[in-house]
Length: 404
Image (cartoon, rainbow, N blue to C red):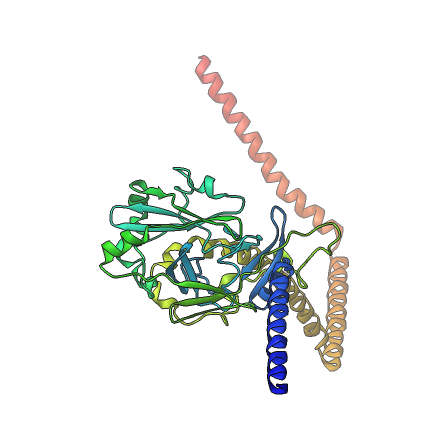
């Protein structure tokens, strides 16, 4: 009798403990703020205070990273097509919030409090399926617009028979064909209503259609809640951390990232840490073409930085001219004292010699008598005068003869 009572007591204690633990776990999940995003994603990227969006997150991924395209695949679940990421941080940015692209930052993520299988919009063309990340502020209704994001080349397309492949990155359609496919595509507006979370999700392509086209049976994956951040796919079950985020009130302490990067200090994709890279990027051969604009965006920052070295280079050039001027001075100072004395002696001797020559000339001039000079002048002038008189006389004779 005592043993039965003891057994019932232990059993009752186990039941009470399990109930309390489940309530505590659910309470913890229902009492989560954006702080969990700020804390859990900080090791894998940078938080930046964007002037339009507030705090955004930039992943430390390789430069050909594209959300809902890099390092992951699609599985079908009760909610529709669900993205399974190979990144350790994939439980949050691919199931909460929105993605957008910026010329300077590249791809960045804006948090939100609503969980979903994937926040993308779908399109169907003849023989193709395609999807594109929803941008911040875009609701499901807006994403169903006929021309929403039609002209923005953030779409990924695969042949409709390849949608369920685990190595889907090998089957992305060339970007050269995107324009043709998009112009001939229509929006897939199928949704799923989650009564437990009071949310509506975009389901994507119909499972029966994909089965019929691919000729393979698709078994829906069951999704289970995980008690800690992360996700794991195993035996047809996806365990993922998906807490219900509460809206912050005035009483709550406003959640903020512990470390915020200044915009000018944001690491560009080419220099970001690739520790989160699972090693399967090479299979996405079309991604570098897609991200050709991203290096240009990131190149604008290096261009700004390269102008500074150019300005700094001019300073050494100016400094080099100074040593040249300084080198001329040592040459003048390098004349030995003995040589200077010799030059001075030579100058003195030259001056003495010039003085002696001047004195000799003066003596010679004094020896010449003035009468001799005057006689010579008169002698030279007289012939000149007599010659002129003869010329006059001859001219007078000629004139007389002509008159006659």
